Image (tube, rainbow, N blue to C red; front, side, top):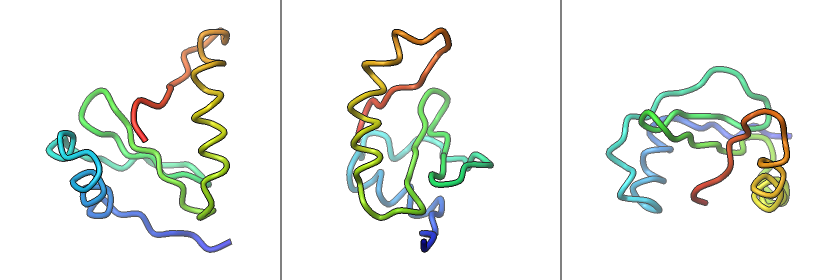
Length: 83
């Protein structure tokens, strides 16, 4: 699989294009991750971007099931707030 390079500039550009109301928040890279790259967005949000697989199926499945499963799990699970 080819890894997609994700930079802070790319994250900011995508936010400006898709969610301009969030584009002014601070963006900080989070270390770790394998198939996804995480970025903190301000104090309360995160940006999670796929870097190994260009197809959307896995993230679509997660978007569907995380909100359903999160309230049933014994630990906090972040759920998507925007796509």
